[in-house]
Image 1 (cartoon, rainbow, N blue to C red):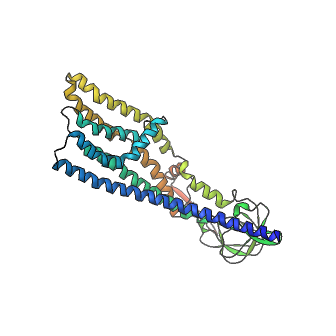
Image 2 (cartoon, one colour):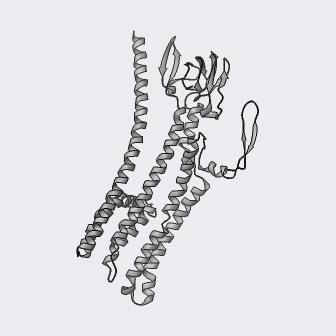
Image 3 (spheres, rainbow, N blue to C red):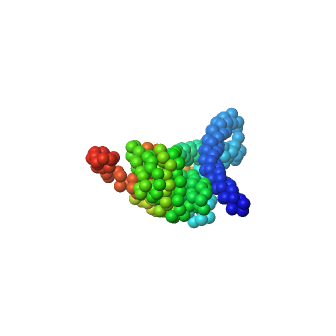
Length: 373
């Protein structure tokens, strides 16, 4: 009786774990969707408030500080996250990032109207911050699509394993199965762990792992790898690897961590940005102060040169370059996974760009094709 209760408890625990894992995945997916929708709503609200602010500026004769208050509403709405990231960067010693550049450029544009003889640039400040947010929205959308493509490839992940223990067949999580234990795989089920067939014969669908469309016949003594699907007969398999060392787990881990393997282009851009950004900021400071000092009429020419320095700062911001390169590689990995092609990381995409010839190994004999990638 106690033994039976133990089995019931184990089964209930496994169901809870499986439900928890599924719930976590669903929660993460919905959280990302809410994040993009929230950003889109903020952008739309900012556009409406910006139009209203421009109408108020045209219709009402307000003082400069009053106009600033009007434009601060859409500016803070769309720029709050960027300003927050800039402050966090300063606190953590990473001041020269794209958030910092956008923040000082737009804050400068808000302040320039208070300089003698200068025109207000409030709408421009909001526009710059708004376009930055639109860029981040598209980045988030593209990244989400790539993650979605990769998650479809994760269908090879086995959900359960039927293991024989003490004469009973128990449904457990694949992580709990030890090397040397016997598992039963019924028709239609995924092979949860690598092992060797000790009883039965079947056809295995390995298309998700090898790309081979023809089912592979397997019988007693043959090796089976996790992630393929049992098509025809029930088989008993003695496991030769634990879940973490099995083929499906390794493939999933490789794809999930592919973005961390930076290509040469990515590492170069990261290093370049760290040197380039401080140079741009120093050049902008020199551009703002040096020409007015040399002109002899500092107070008259300073607003003009300050405005030019701020525009130089915005135009020179490397954020597009820094964001686009990793995003392009991540999108490439996601696009390949949608076609069922596994790429271990961005560095391997660099190698693929130089490939001229591809060998396709198929049964019964290999065929050779030339392909320009």
